[in-house]
Image (cartoon, rainbow, N blue to C red):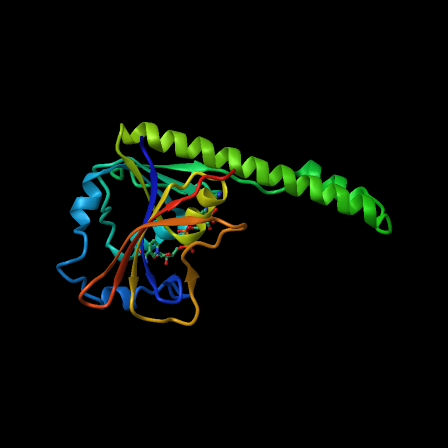
Length: 220
Ligand SMILES: NC(=O)c1ccc[n+]([C@@H]2O[C@H](COP(=O)([O-])OP(=O)(O)OC[C@H]3O[C@@H](n4cnc5c(N)ncnc54)[C@H](OP(=O)(O)O)[C@@H]3O)[C@@H](O)[C@H]2O)c1
């Protein structure tokens, strides 16, 4: 069965880029021959999901060369991003902002009616979480269909992978941990609640990196 796999490189302290979206720490690191070859991983992939932040990073840093041309890609954004016609990708929009009506409802509750305001805010937040989960499930289903029996690569970044993990739609993590620390940066998986992973394999590579494959425990 097709899986959503977050295949990513992270630092020892759990970052995938610096705050300024720099990846020099990763580019400077040469993977050793005992690492799982990228091509082997990529052969099992039939489609990909990518966040707008990562999409923009690629477009700015690869002189417009799109590295995933042979697989359909789904770009998550709340904006109307325009994608060059020669790129095999579509934007999937999933805004979960408060609607104008919801904002007005909360505003209209008298300032001193604290309890009602709190209940309304909580109900709207619950609805937003539900909307988010439904959106994640719909996008995951679309990407799996497009993958035609192969797996879906969740390219990242962290925010995008966490969106699927929070909704119970991420099945596997393939993390190459590089032996560097950044101290701060963009987090590898900033989930909103507990997500449990079950390690499947872990290999210490000759250059000090650690390759870990973990299945995500389904939500109960
Ligand atoms: N080390 C690695 O292997 C690796 C891998 C991948 C990425 N990266 C790096 O990670 C950085 C980007 O990561 P990131 O976590 O900041 O960003 P990201 O996940 O790439 O993109 C975040 C953006 O995606 C859109 N998005 C995500 N979830 C959404 C949702 N549920 N609904 C609507 N839109 C959604 C939003 O864009 P809008 O503002 O358009 O709504 C959001 O601002 C880049 O520097 C990239 O180079 C590193």
